[in-house]
Image 1 (tube, rainbow over the protein chains, first blue to last red):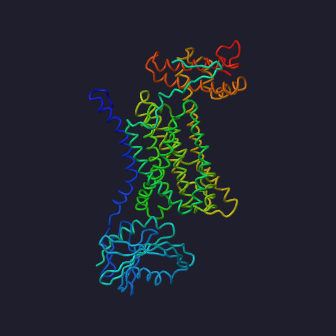
Image 2 (image 1 turned 90 degrees about the vertical axis):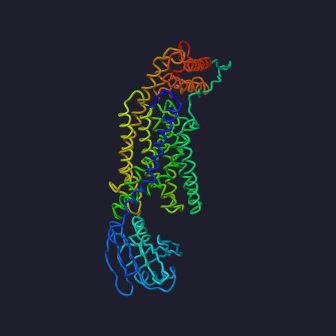
Image 3 (image 1 turned 135 degrees about the vertical axis):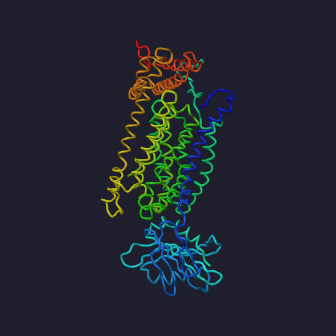
Length: 191
Length: 410
């Protein structure tokens, strides 16, 4: 309780500061608490998922392997609800930008009814230090299906292994999974 | 204090401002916290407006023009809602600025952060339906009401009734709504001329009554109750009422953002869809509006009771007569008395009567704060009222013959 007993000045001043300080602390908790909580919830669950012998993707809780792709292009699809992360690995001779465009022209365009791709790529850097590029697309794949939006991340290792990550979801829903997919991509180990 | 009165009956009576607490209270820590947060977030808010202006210069100007047309009457309506004691303009503007600058900026960050949590816990389908309802209501209301609390801490003696909190809260909500609408007009409705008008129709014409002004006005009443009832109500009850009104505001916001009772058309294909929008908005928003109207009505009734109680011991002292008090506590009678005065004795007399009534309200405030009957401020205010009344009575036709004190009855 704020009293007037000596040293009154100091006590009154602390009485005046305390409520304001509580307000500021509440503001900080509301503004930054979500990021802290989301970070705490974004723990890897289960062992890393391997793509061939070179790529290991640590799935976050809630994500599970839905499909494996065989053939010349090895790959895996991780799914959480309507959110998906396709990961492909293969030998590749060019750079990351070439790989990203090659993925668009070789995998997305042949299956798309309509496709819009971002005109330029953005640089990304994985936690391991590997550098790559990122582009975005919106398109319709197959009759009657809802439009899909996706974020493609491509990188090529010094040893010539190309890795493509395609995070996609029905249009409007990617924003709710993209934080997860970016975290998994960041933590992916490419040997 | 002698008040000079001219032979023509004009009087140089300055409003008593000694008790007014302006925003610039450098001795209050709350002021510095308020200022620091507004300055830091202001930087970001201005840069965001620059982005909107860059995206669509004409859309941005049109957005602000339309929103000012909407905001100005709302501002005046809220400001004049407090019949007896208008809040200092500096604190009212401070509330508006907090809502427009600090709360919107902080809410943008908070909504995004807690949206990640909802997506993490519920998955994308759930998040797409429920993020807006599970994040924005409590986060935005907390951030807006935090500003109201800071403003109450800056000027605690200005908060003596729930209506004060409604005014501060509603102003904060108004600032928030305007800046959020600009974001929607440019970012969601496209920023084209037709897009801005469409956004204005959906968010202001159809739904403007139900949004942030109501939520934060209600939450502000709770804050004011907590501050104003110190000393005469238990802490438990003050916290209970404050938290209760905040929760109701959050619940109203939650219902608005949730998929429940959602009759809004997915797309507008004809006149029917356009007409459905205000109906859908009313279904979601009217229950809270009804609650707020009742709360404001109760607040004003309580304010009237407070005025009567505060001035009852002053009746027939120099400051106020029984007749004057009877008129003062009845807003309709007050307006009528001024109107009659204008008809009988002209504009100057009517203005002087309004001044007298305002000073009598100030007398009530000083009365409640004065420790004794002969407190110097109280004595000074009584003389102030008397001198205005004397000046009024000296004006031709202002005081009907044979009716002492009849001047203010009009």
